[in-house]
Length: 202
Image (cartoon, rainbow, N blue to C red; front, side, top):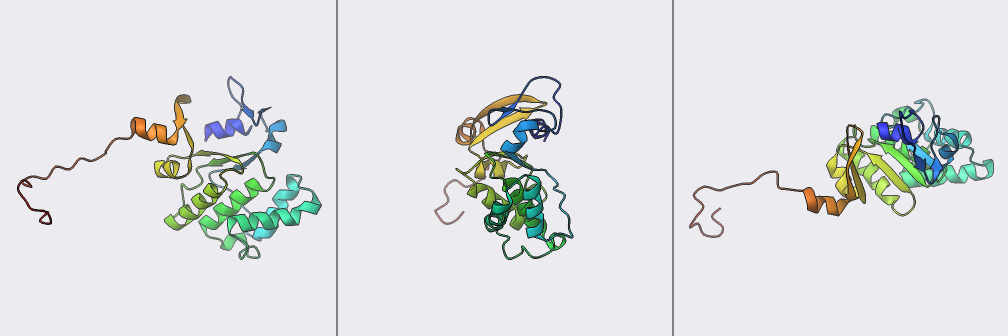
């Protein structure tokens, strides 16, 4: 979370510099803001607005040209699976639907990079599956930078993995390389008195 806040300009670093899409990051976002989308861990969305209205507002604030805005909103509603719910108030959405709407707003400018802070941490299994499916569908379209403590999500959707501890980079490698290097059985089962039993008796 802290790393994402630094990369999006929401927090000021004590030292060092960062770039997003080769653009220097400044406190407050600066020029880099046009190069990324952002979904916070707990997105605040006006419950009285309809899904389509919310995306249109975000697009206007982000500077999407008026001539492109309706098409861009339709595209994001389709991508997030919310087309049928677009005319309903966000206050009636499930948590998973609100999270998908939040992801849609992060993508409305078609940014080259999108930052997602714990996007599945408070979702039920259905909502989690929907959000992970949406993130996985972005493969090859944009760079997704995700922070999460749910290792099963990492194994499912991440290509590259970095592990931080107290602000220090511990390791960074491809997902499969890390699995092969560090994964170990959690449980080992020994069966007492199993010797001599025939197949099917166990």
